[in-house]
Amino acid sequence: METVIANNNFKSEEYFINMGPQHPATHGVLRLLLTIDGEIIKKVEPDLGYIHRSIEKMCERDSYQQIVHLTDRMDYLSANINNEAVCLAVENALELEIPDRVKVIRTIIGELTRISSHCLWWGVMGMDVGALTTYFYGFRDREMINDIMEETCGARLTMNYNVPGGLMYDIHPNFVNRVKAFITHFKTKIPEYDRLLTDNVIFQKRTQGVGILSKEDAISFGASGPVGRGSGYSCDVRKHHPYSALDRVKFNECLETAGDTFARYKVRIAELWESLSIIEQLIDNIPEGEHRVATNAVIKLPKGEFYQRVETARGELGVYIISTGTKNPYRLKFRSPGFSNLSLLNHITVGGKIGDLVATMATLDLVIPDIDR
Amino acid sequence: MTNEALQQLITSWVPEIECTEEGSQFLTITVVPAKLHDLMRKLKETPETHFDYLFCLTGVDWGQALGVVYHLESTIHRHNIVVKVQTEDREHPTIDTVSDIWATAEFHEREVYDFFGIQFNNHPNMKRIFMTEEWEGYPLRKDYEDEINMIIK
Image (cartoon, rainbow over all chains, first blue to last red; front, side, top):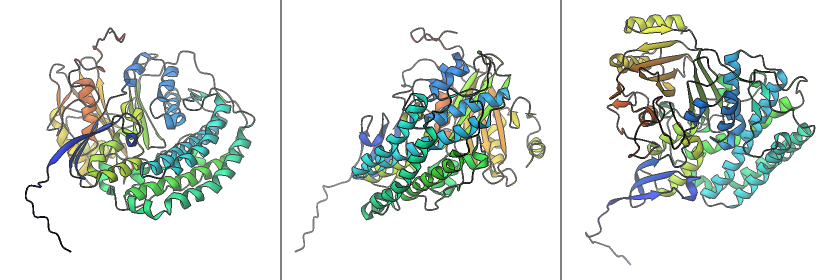
């Protein structure tokens, strides 16, 4: 039985819809203005600023100790690494010698933060493409890290554990044992993640060949973190500009060459193993010593310009301080990874379907406060 | 390339630039707005320099002048440079866009426009990115005042 619909009245027409700011797949208050033709995306224009707090302006009136606290509120899933970035910038400017103990603890905490961020991302990634179970698995494992953080510094999300000169408190006596217990636990769980989602045929069909980003474009758009590495672009700040104790550990930079959504997914899963390996190398050898060196109560940076880059869970965070020698920065800029990664969204989703946009956006791992600052 | 070699090469292209390594971990060059676009294109396209990664673009209010600071890195040679450009015109500051050279500049330049009011010539989409279109003034300028939010000079 053949039916041919020959009706010239059906004409395709471009139209415009809003996605967000309350759409569950935008993970916060990101609004996308979509120009679509049926299911095909013609243009994606992000509309930002719903939670812009002008942290950079606030920094200009704050002391350097206060600035550290604001950085938690940018990329809240990489809070510790953001804190570390500002502390390192200030310490380098002051030419402070930081004890080994602090460096090692900072690196362990940083990698724990990365794992917990990737756990959350993994859970949400599954949820975005329709697999709700992953959300509970991801949160179950992230909970263990949150508990460790809570015991160490009293906070679960906005830690403020780093201060210029070291750490606010020494680690809790249980810290080492709990981290080891977590490593043992989590090593059995990553294969579970793979069985549940990575090897899932439906998931692979949703993600392979979708949202392809070439290496040249990744560099041009300033992509960093797993987004850049999924396109075969070696951009790991931990490798190229090691900080804290990262120069004394062995780890691989996780690279994939396909550049599609699945490649970015695989990079993050591989990073979980690498982060575990970094923690394992350090956890038994935390040097004895002070957890903090004394700084002046009022920190004045010398006149000049200071730039510090670190690798957060999302990519390269840059802290650019222009100091005139006073107790406040003259100008402080945060180069946030999410902002640059978002700018390539239009480029990689045009021509695809709306459902693919959701899957692609999930692997960009956007955190809106990081973009809006 | 070492900083000295870089400095020599760039001075041979544009003699009127100012170079300094003082007060910064990177080689810093200052260029006039008219020469900016040519210099940036050369920095990216010349094989010896190959600055293909613009990792930070910052607007700065220097008081007298408004400026933009570009942090560049080469993903092959792994050397860095900082390029600064300034304009004294606070009423209608304009600088050429570099978004045709590095795609990431498109968003970052919109951010600079939003907070400093610097217009970028030939930018494909020159409008505010965070604030609403009706917002008056440019918040990150040093002479910006907003008494409700306790921002005073």
